[in-house]
Image (tube, rainbow, N blue to C red; front, side, top):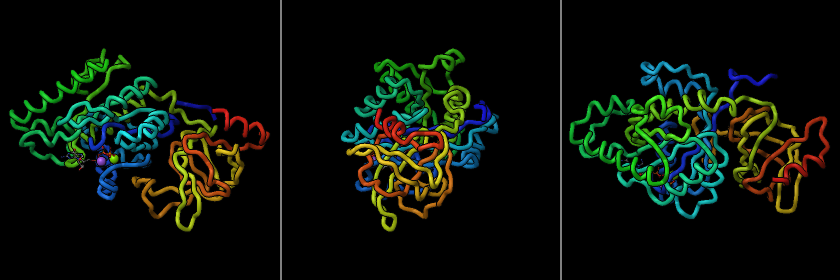
Length: 349
Ligand code: GTP
Ligand code: MG
Ligand code: NA
């Protein structure tokens, strides 16, 4: 089928930033879950993946879109959570390499911190577009909660003193970004020239706890995806997939969590994986996903699929997966392919 602008895959959004800036909480807010409180020490230690359906994106941006009137056509969004702790640089690097667009989460009360800066440079080096969430806006002195409201409406409800603190902290963050060579502005104060400039970064104040600004960041990501990234998001049948993690699951044996970026993966496909001992070919015996709006790293009632379409995170069941390496690509042997060629190809990167 011809690739068209009308048939886009889900964008892959990665959430990055310093430890405890609220990355997982932000996702919990959108999912209506409580993953963060179940984490050991409240610290994320793995890459996660959550798929949001289009209907969720529409519902969660409805209020803001009454005024924005954006024609949201994406089939959904896949969001990757990453750890902010300093020891997980490799996972942040993998996350940043897998995504189309990123949210860099900054704690508005702390400004830019060490892993914020590290993440920022990873994104800049790869040329990945990103937005900055100025999170924990509810910590501004005597913030009046406006649950889940668009941020501009919430700011209108605040007293002058609260607004002053917000403005001063936001402008500090802007200066710190400037010191890292990043031009930014509060997103609704950006001019047309700023939007045209692909290096200009929009700032979105958010609260992952009370929800102000969450509509804004979601809608902004959808707008960036449809307006700026549509070429790379055009759906295509060729499989593009990467191993996120290899783990044993009770009752299922060894499974491989795969991020399918584009293309199809089907039960019965002969898939080629990389292991430390070289390539292996295995038949896909099962394709499982958590329900929409649920985190893949949390054990749940998995949904079984005959076929899945990128972008999606999927748990693959098959034989001989024990030594598959995270971060490597996955290929399938097509009807006209030579197995040896595919094996060579999968090991080449
Ligand atoms: P790591 O994954 O370990 O890097 O942390 P994280 O960035 O995922 O942060 P996490 O979601 O674990 O949140 C850290 C702490 O900040 C928790 O205690 C949250 O409840 C709190 N928190 C997160 N977002 C907000 C927010 O918007 N407002 C307030 N007041 N607290 C927040
Ligand atoms: Mg986290
Ligand atoms: Na944390």
